[in-house]
Amino acid sequence: MLSNRFARTASLAMAAAALVVAVPALARSKKDKEVVQPDVVNPRLAGFAQGLAVHSYYKRYRGPYWFKDNGAAANRLAALLRRAQLEGISQGPSLAAEIENAALAAKSQDKTQRAEAEQLLSAIWVTYVETIQRPTADVIYGYPALAPRPTAPDRVLSAAAAAPSLAQHLDEVAAVNPIYSQLRDSAWAQLGSIPVAVPDRRIVMNLERLRSLPKTERFAMVNIAAQTLTMYEYGKPVDSMKVIVGMQDLPTPMISSVIYYATFNPYWNVPEHLVRKTVAPNVLKNGVAYLTTRGYQVMTSWAADATAISPSTIDWKAVASGSVRIRVRQMPNADNSMGKLKFSFENGEGIFLHDTPTKEYFAKTQRTLSNGCVRLEDARRFGRWLLKRESAAPSTTPEHFVQLPAGVPVYITYLTAMESSGKIVFLDDIYGWDAGGRFKPLGAAASAAR
Image (cartoon, rainbow, N blue to C red):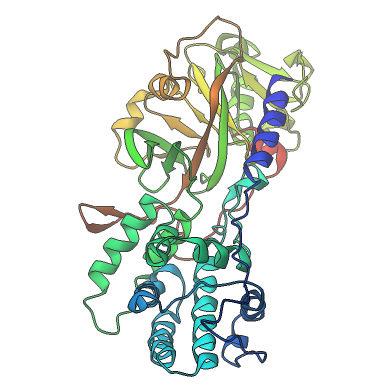
């Protein structure tokens, strides 16, 4: 019941976060005669998905004006488009060339021709912004409001028109987030010196994964490929630790969600394949004492209000063969696979961050050893960062929930290309996702046993 209440609170919080105050548009006035807006849509403008919306905007509002201040904003936009192949815009260099041609047209005394050039640059800018604001493919968003949504064209242009410095505004929007910028800028520094260079596909894919990073003061990021968790404050890493992630056949998915509470003394729901391959055979061999000595319980169902039942009522041969599926959970104890602390968050796949009694696994270089969940090297230290106080168990009560002072976004991603001291470091593609592999969601019952 408590977790449901937190989920409702989270949903309301995410919905509230989705409400963004619109940037006021600058209405056209009779005195605004800097350009004459054409009544007919430029054929090139019509070639953009939002071309008509841009044309309509200029009929109602002023700016943005790209060729003021000796065309500083136009030059900056061209520079952004030259590197846009890194960001998934394959036609970036050709669009940059169009901007340069439009700049020549803007020098004409023909005001209509200049207006068409202004609108063309605005259409290019809207296209760029829509691309860098697209949701990352294959990310599970715990709350709908967390999924990035491209800003409407009129709001993109209103924000640009209202900016004290249009060129600076372009840089601020294009930055996306600090980690994204570091990777892109380092990749461009290496690529930009190579004539007619084609960007490494891995860079493009990793930048796409970074677009959905939370834009908040505090967030935690798990990099599956590096098997690390990093805590960020104001865009800078403040702490990190090793983690254990899912095996290749039970991979940890990419997730964007929010942690609202910590769970002390957690239960462990034994994954179905372990119930079948380990628990059932041992019960058949050693009797129900195998369950008792390890603190295992057989539950009536996967529901939150499930109760324990006698293991003697179970056909363990059928469980071992896979023809009968049951839920087995382990009570909190020294051998509990959840350890002493768990951090849950909405994701639909039963994935969470948790402590572990098998600390020796963190000495391994390759830590793809879990059933999909993320095991933490130091759960108490992570809990201390989340709670902003010591993370000691308040009691011995199983599943003791403690609410965080404020929800903390958590982003589980798959970064195989990272910036380090201005250079790009490539990591092993442990799941084959760079090569086209994809995460396959589990069923509800299976995911609950992660």
